[in-house]
Structure formats: structure tokens, C-alpha cells
Image (tube, rainbow, N blue to C red; front, side, top):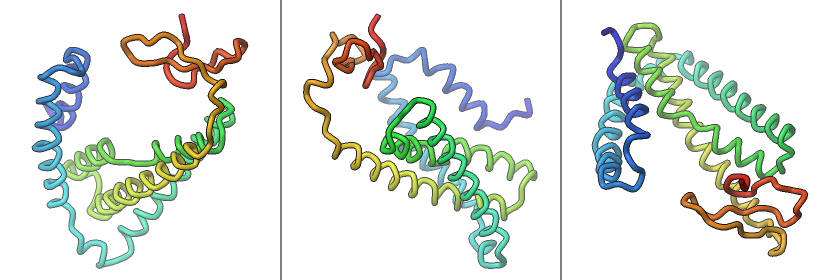
Length: 190
């Protein structure tokens, strides 16, 4: 009672996620319905709420968007940089973390839509947030692609990794030096 439908749908998805096998026919049908029906209608409904003329009436929406973008991207870059320092990652890995985490879409859109419908925020904040979502999604994609290309250009010597037996989740790769058990891909051996 009193909970927005989008929050209820999100919680239901979280609850059912563990119960439906990933490669089942049911999961395939759920993904198809979500990707071809529900997500497009949700995005269309949000697009119909946005008033583009608010952007042309004054700089308020653009100021909100600029502030949100600056704070969001700066925060994500600082988080990626701290992760690099703590875990001793390379520059390429830091850039990849930044690119993958910098996009704001589903959760941001859901929260801002609930706030707008409840009258908590005005059209300037709604439009500024929509601009944030558009810019960070494009920026995150470009940053991730650049970081991945830089990382792919670095070749690992063939003797630097060894294959460990494959389990149901895939092949685990580890560094060849016995003293270094840190995984490259997968989980640590039992």
C-alpha cells in the first residue's frame, strides 16, 4: 500500500531471479518480453513525461544537468582511482572500471520518475537527470571501448597464465607463478 509499482516490480524481479535457471526456456521468454515490450514502453512513457521546452526556457535544467554530470563522473573516476590504488590495478584496468561504472540509467530513471510523480522534484531536475542519463551512457560506452582496446593491445606472454580445470562456471585462469594465486579470470582454486 502506497508503494510505487516500479519498486514492486523491481523487488519481485530480485526475488524471482534466483528461482529461475539462467539457461531455461522461462528465462528466455522473460528476457524477450522485457526487452521487446516492457523496457521500450517504460522508456516511451518517460519520454512522454519530459518537457523539452523547459530546456529552452532557461538555463536551470542545463545547470542541473551540468552539475549532476560533473559530480557523477568525478565520483566514479575517484572510485576507480581508489580501486586502482588499493588493488594495484593498471591504468587500463582503472579506465575500464571507470567506463563500466559511469553510466546511469535504469535505477536513476526509476528513482527520478517516482520523485517527479510524487511532486518531490520539478521539471528542471527531471530534464537535467534525463540529460545526465543520455550523456553518461554515451560517455561510458566510449570510455569502456577505449579502455578495452588499450587493454587488448597489451599481449600477455603465453607462459604467464595456466589453465585450471574447468567447472560449471567456465575456465579459471591463474598466473603461472606459484606464489601469486590471484585470479585473472574466475575464482581462486579450492
